[in-house]
Length: 91
Image (cartoon, rainbow, N blue to C red):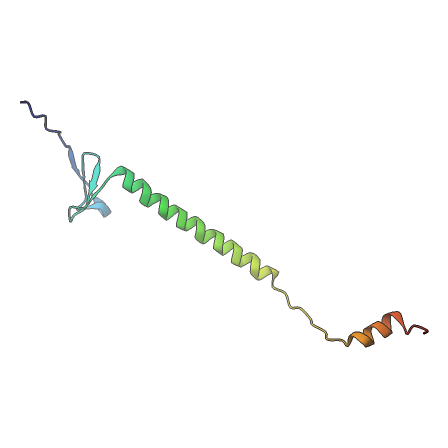
């Protein structure tokens, strides 16, 4: 039997990514947690979706604040209003 072992090229990252490394296609954290490209795309998609939602909510709140204007409410007796506008009818 022949066993073929997959060669992984391990690259250590620098700067803010110090402690992280690339092992094959996966990003490996300092604690050994592996993140696949598919998982990373999902995480980035969710972050972007949450940012879009926050921007939409901010636009909605801004539009709602503009629409809020003071409304004057006047309570008038309906009988008085009818007499003033239509007069009294001759019966």
